[in-house]
Image (cartoon, rainbow, N blue to C red):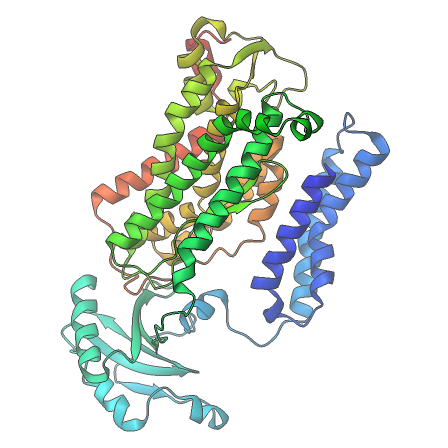
Length: 496
């Protein structure tokens, strides 16, 4: 429990430092204490009363209400004068009305900000000439520091309008600007011109493959180390006979294959669309699972929601396709044990297979009649890796913010609707954590993640039916992993 608390506190601090510190004058450690209050309360209760005595429901719920309230009071008490989350991503004021303006107008910045204007008067006239009224009738031009916002009325299909206006702007200004096309909170599409960052090659680019291979090698060692524990060997035995590290390879290779294929799905799809990205990097960790996973970093904006969708969904689907056969093989070689009273979804020596619908189906397929109402699973190391892959797929598919699932719903429904779905998901997942207590830490972390995803350059054009269907499949897969098996299913499988 203490290790989980330290991990939660560390992740919370990193998120606050990256996402919140620049928005408020309130000391970061004060905000951190406010958010960590429920976790500290939970820890103190367990220290005093023991883990067998659960925290009273009213106290737990009260802490999750009071803690965010105190956090927001402290945050807004020291809040800097900054735009809303959607404005931060796009440089727009979503509250402004543009559809009813009949003539082209210009909103000038304050005198002190004149020098920050991205265009002079002559360049502004050239920009106006780029908007054909039959394509996009320009109504007004707003200025923000280093950004130009063009509002008007869309009069042609979004994809066609974006391509035509982008071509004209690039003809006038070259590659000086990135042209973003998105919708405000009222569903009105508008254009944003922001300076195009210089794409200069880093001097250490040649070292990146070496870094990726080095991290993979270290992760292979740390996961193999953890794998030897799963195989039943102690640290003392490993120190006396280092060759026992080979016994941890099945777990290590299975887990790294799952994580590597997941990130390779993102990487290869990004390369296909010519999106600049880093190589997949593993994150070694000497405790817990032996790794914190793997990641890639997208270094250029998404051209449209279709590309955003394809790159986002490629990772979870590729990882899941590899996870299933490894999980099945591991379950075949796992043992069935009597289910204890305290069986949980993360107790690998006595895992309740009914904690997940997908796990229930795969377990029944692998073990057949051995699986009964009173059965739990003592997982083989490869099954542990497969189960971790299943959990990792679910966590990535949570439809919140900048997770893969958040990108997917953004691509399906648009940035504004995706933010609303993310907010609903936060509370729904918190409710789920009271049924499946193993999700509680992740439910808390969701409240620290931003719910507004960065826009694609053309963030207005919608997906086709095939991608919408695949998106619904991804959402269904997420639900099938995180939700316990319904009684009807378990009865049909003769588990109960």
